[in-house]
Image (cartoon, rainbow, N blue to C red; front, top):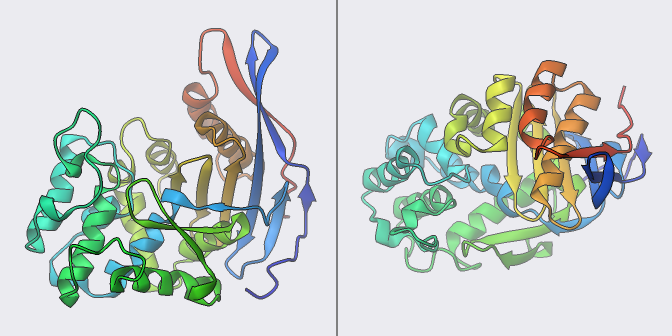
Length: 320
């Protein structure tokens, strides 16, 4: 990407402390980047070029395959269906039914899903990635591509997904380092500034497909996560101003809708609690959420016990 190495503001990485009655018990380290839709790093705490797997934060961009191929129209899939294709759901009955309906409309069967059956569950429909897998199968069905091998890196649907991402990042597709995520689908190794850039592009709504993905995720946030999900709560509280998608191992990505700005967080030790604390701290510093929203999120994600609390130390330099 052009101008990708321009850092206008940079500081040290953030430190997240677990305080037990005010005494530090545990410490996590987070790297944070804010980029614009052109790939320029506007604010950095730590190393914006730190590379790691994007994990499930990639789902809105994997969903571009079904959004751009005509599959939504052919199988009469709604924004609610698209939201769960972008999501990491919690396996509620409503969510499982939504994934089943995607398959049913495309004349597919739950047995075609190759994501694992979660522990103590009965069906791959209950896996948190089943929506993503259903979206991939829809594209395969539409193009008459093989269903049984849709997770292979060289399958046409995976090549289509990688092509969309490579185009957005202005990189040759063969330069991406690929590995399989826990659900079996490919994920990609990239710099966190690239993750932030992707979410800035998503939030810009520069294409009809990305605009529809934003609308789906922000109008149906309960499909993206669930009642106990940070992504769902953040999008509900901000009422369409932010689009949010978490990934495993300390990844959190957020786009500021209409402002062409994206935020990416990587907690080095993969801590989930630390990435949410970092997100709340960063969003408040940037002015992307008002104090009332920050306080509401803090009640759940910072005050984690009767005697313990998470605290973030450091600064993300302001862009303005």
